[in-house]
Length: 491
Image 1 (spheres, one colour):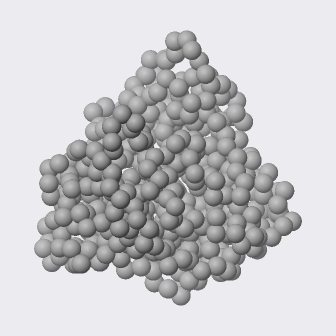
Image 2 (cartoon, one colour):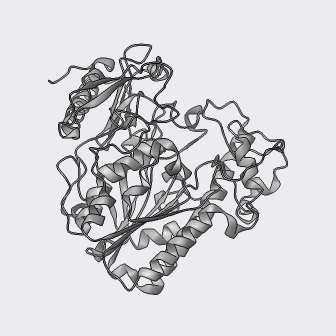
Image 3 (cartoon, one colour):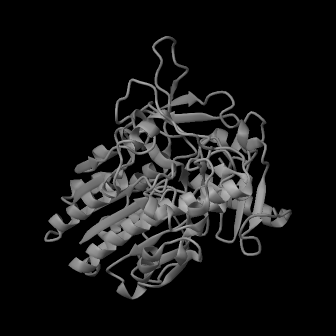
């Protein structure tokens, strides 16, 4: 048995043809849907990038206890568990956040790994002189990105192309062997939407546009014209078309080597991306609307070939991927893993979870039952009280300071730490204040799938609050999370 995880970053479900989109260019995603189970109700859990990857290792949420961080000493790691059982694990990626301090131990859990340089702000090519940045409309560009772009000239130079090429080479070399996992992880279609011209030429809007470059929206409210919004959406779609071509390359090698008979294929993402919907760009600050949290997921499970081409309506989450891979290789999830194997759902033998929580650290805490989504905002305008809990204290853009004693306190651990004490670290002042302004939001996805009209229904809200509290208790949420959300602590 072998398994391949093909992961794309910021892959929008609503822009893929298997989920009903008719204007983007995704024929290989349509082809994938015929060789796999398409999940209708797959949701993120912890967001954004590295929190989502941490739960792909651990099978449990982490956004209630901390933000972007390294793997912790008490974390169970799915690839590490496989390696210990003699299953070779390999990571091929151009996702440069793995090599920054806050996530610098993720790749170490794989037996072997390789990395391809040049995406976004990856500090790749040194340039001591002034940076020539062309006129553009971008709100979030980085000088390093413009330096990197000058070294990416032909399509084969793109980091994503190199990553997929390496993954296919790995598959070919190891096709004669059994018991291995490949995680083939692409940074695209994460912004910036830098892509060869042949993919831009697929879209009439881009062929006819002669205005400023706009391939990197800011993380902010929309104030651009409808024309520029459409340009940004088409630039995303152009990069998505290149991702679709890379997916096709992987599908080709599955066909050529007949891997479908004994190799699991998982195609997933960490979250989506707002491209003007709800009058917002990007993620992190606005509520975790459907465009962000309701994600695409495709799984080909060779144990259930009759499920290929079928659709699964079970409510599933990113935390289910680690238990699914472990189960495929005949291993049990650990007691700390909240996720469940998806094999029974693919086979049609299990209805899935009754509810799932999702969100980002310091933001609203959200719950869905697959029909309704409830978003609970912090009650205090400052978004607190809020602490992070961890032992490996390197987190996003932050490290221990040598100039002043850190305000850290060693406290008793949680269920998920196995009793290991952890450091309690006060979150920066105002870390969660942006979430308070949105208030509590309740949506009926059946009557309002685009979440344009929040409900006011005390009975439904009460039921969703009960689900939220139940799920928070199940993952052993820190006590102050109940206080900041003005919820009754069941303890």
